[in-house]
Image: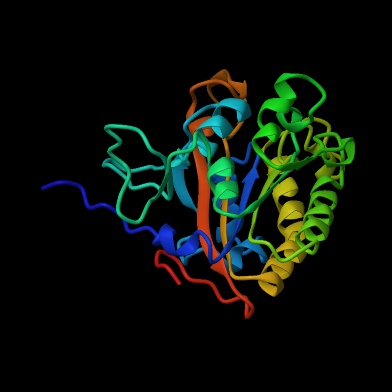
Length: 281
């Protein structure tokens, strides 16, 4: 018997009727994210997660640049279970086995271009260095969007980076009523994250968790602004995890479970902050 294909929202109904917000929590480990959810320490994100918490998925890559190239082509993290899992978005190509009737398939090479062609305003708010527009490489991903932003205050060295990103996002969302595709790469989880844990001298899973607590609180105004602006479909996930000494590994760009396994969620936001999962509005 073939594996059961999980249901996804009807993305044909979502595209055009909803704002779309895609947030990557850069470097966030699945185990840390799920532990905080289980402990009730994600009061903002936890409201939108299903009863079991984060879905464990496998990233298509082990570091930011490669993962986001895949994401923007429609290859979001894959459910961590055997089978062919239908995708939300897909750039059309012959032989695709994960494009379903509910998948929003497009002829363009990437999702920002596809949404722009359908009347969306596309906005990138960068975080880690691959979005800083300071080098040729740092321009590749932002250049996919009509509008892109980055500053040092939104980067990995800033203690208040997520607050600054959220403030900018809210300001940009308030500038007009056009359907919007907003992408934010949250940098706070990335090293160095020890500043989020008083007295910590070296990044570790505890400081990683402390950074996530900070991010959770900082995202609250953004979700409120989305709810007030328009029906919104949100995707929140990590692009890869990070090792803190497990099996001798540190960092990422290595094929280790702490790097491959990432938290994932998608949900709807409306004016009453109610959300649904797995079905089109």
